[in-house]
Image (cartoon, rainbow, N blue to C red):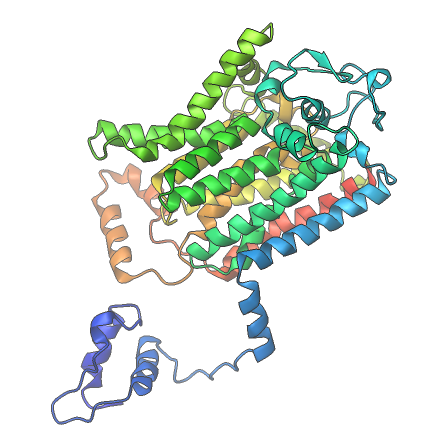
Length: 500
């Protein structure tokens, strides 16, 4: 050790072992020789890590592996991986279950809503009532045709008229709703949007100090097997939502407002994001912490788009308004449907019949467990996560709207691999990614300890510890958490390759 270096190292320890800027000039005690930069860095590492001298130096990773990880640390590489993986799922489902008939992805039924004899050109059908993809296909044929029945398909609920962003994109890409192109176009759009979700997730991960490959967590969700395999709108809506969040972080508020508005136009539950932003901003204005500004477009524009759509739907379409129909069908009292639904899945589960089609209770339960693990973990790091208050409020809002308040429309029927809860999952993943991955600085730790000790009364002690502000999440722990949804995805995907 250099003469007088003990005082120098004590100053370095206050910065968590990192070299602060003011130490760029070498600290040299009187009468001592100035050490070289490399010697200083090695000495700092030895001092700031207790017992480092006693441990053997770990061998460096092979150069080829390091070069590969460096190349994969890019959003484009992550998006390509996601696209290829989900393309493999689509091809397998197309060949195994659909027997080469891509129109089966539409999931058009044969009773109640779809009328095969009135459809031109003919498409393949599934038994019974079908699934939501048939309504997106119907509006992709003619997004401005708001008749109750058109192209052989009758609309079931009025809220279908105000969630047509996916259908509009398909109508444009298929050159005006070309019926022979649409079945393929609907699938391709979802594949591209899944790749975009991975790309945006990678960018958000890198901004949080993580490797870009963590962006794959945004597309490692079991509900996407339904969205991609049954032509529903979640991939496009959530790609727009993530793009809006990224634009908002970079103060590109007009782009953020446009992306979030189109996400609402595609899937109106994302209005929860705009509502959370509005709540936070309005509270800050009331406390005179901020003034109205261009950033408020992020909640004003989506809200305006939704209101305009509701007015148009009310004028053109008879019956209950789309917003009221949506709320009455999909929302209920807190936990009223969730608790009985989960209890039923536990009581009816039979692990000896896990692979039997139609025996949904097993899959419902493992889907819920994977979702609950991410949601609970995100709640535990919500104070420590380096996200804006608006994004944290959005996470709480999605958990309430999509899970706690969800009606029997979801919990009393087939879980659908959690398709409708994907926004709560995505924002939860962003919270986990933005949680510090290493040791928190002493300043943050001291501030958190001070905050805990100054909370009034013992009643606040437990919440202060549970939702600690100095919590960290290493890459290893994050990997263990993300292993649960990945395993469930691996279990669920083959089921929808073989069955509908």
